[in-house]
View 1 (cartoon, rainbow, N blue to C red):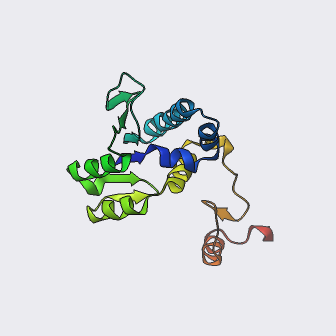
View 2 (cartoon, rainbow, N blue to C red):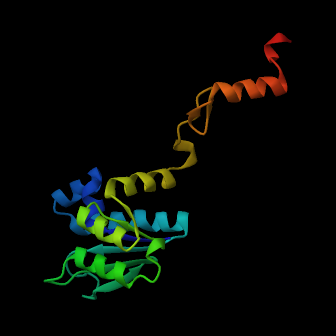
View 3 (cartoon, one colour):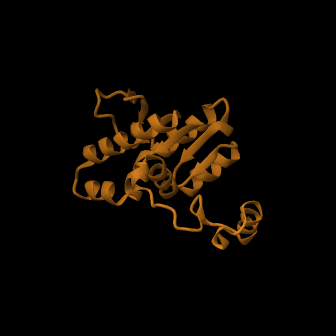
Length: 168
């Protein structure tokens, strides 16, 4: 699976990153997103490309690779959405492409090419689940398995196998 991400969609979907943008700290917001994407790439082993509107602050190149993440910058009059669509069309196996954008038109066009889609909020939730240290994960409550209640059928099966231990 390869991820093609609309960078500003994800930044504005995250409260902390959006606050950096509101405070005029564009570069810091991008760097923080890149830090998260590097961790995501390391944890999943997936290829990650992120597209931003505007010119690159890294020597004016329209495409750059930093920390194993491919960064693509649009140049006027082109927009990030245009580049995302070009990348989808160019993809040799779109079924293995996850397009991350909250733009409904991008999602629709990506699905027409059989690419998978996630909106920015869903992608942030996915990253949080993957990157959250095990120690921070909520412990299971008694009677839960994989975070879900154990069914009565499963309880009955275990009681049949092991018997009612409270009888001892």
